[in-house]
Length: 84
Image (cartoon, rainbow, N blue to C red; front, side):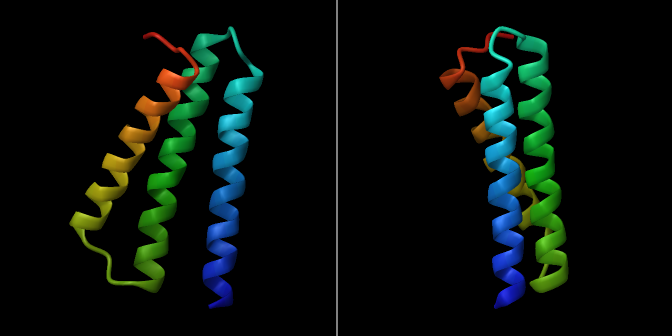
């Protein structure tokens, strides 16, 4: 159980930093896009590693993490008013 807490705290910290940094560099659209995409890639990698170590990993799980990352990118772009 303690290992799960460490995984999730790490995930929350990285997601908060990614979003916070994207908000901090307001006006620098390319940097904001890069930060949001890198944060999303971290989320997918984190999910794959977490499930590979602690659960039964499958392609379905990986696709779910990718879908949620894409959805998250869309929401952040909308909230931050980033137009590609």
